[in-house]
Image 1 (cartoon, rainbow, N blue to C red):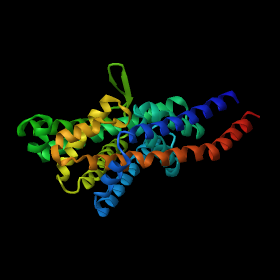
Image 2 (cartoon, rainbow, N blue to C red):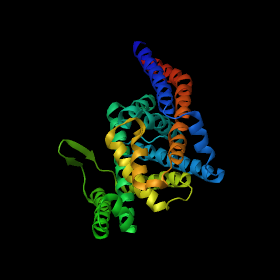
Image 3 (tube, rainbow, N blue to C red):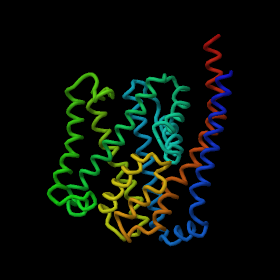
Length: 310
């Protein structure tokens, strides 16, 4: 019973933190700034941006769906989608996603029979999928647009193409190791059990498609002021910077980096609109789902535990 009270207190704290984050972030802009930035974007572009953002979150739910198979505890897609969207809608805004979204994931998956070690492996699998997607998309940008992407990376066309190939080789090596190497992959103190070949290929595919959708969302909000591949290259660099910084939701880092890389093309209105579409809209939805799950799922889970104990 004491443990239940503690968990409920943590959920309440998460809701309060989420509300504070919304207030703190939105307070940087006046309501006029936000409304004008959204109103300045054609409705068709805004609708497409919402659609691409939804497709990205759909890809993220597949991360969890695959990870559950990786740890040997496959669950139905609706359960994986609920845990994934709720945790990431909150985690993207709180920052240090492995910890923030991980805590929400633990709340869901522990109810559904996963232990702490399995949940930790699931989170690592999803993190590796993120990394593979970013690296693969960066490689494609560097190869397809060596001049533009190379300039963003501070490289010449030849060096850009070479780095792009190296990025793609990382994914190819990962797939090859998954096909032929059994056991764990060890890098210093970090260990990772390689998935089966099919899962490894799906990781790279869905990870890359996810970031391609995010870049498409941003590109729509830029309203054709810059090409899709240029937007993608800038977003990859900006997102990597945000991840390294561990600032909540990449707050300010994403805007500053993309603004620097794209120059005048990255209007403040488009960047505010991107944060509204990809971060602010999913956050309250995630909080509502979390509260609803606590009201509907937690009592059933606790009843099941008491029944099992008796």
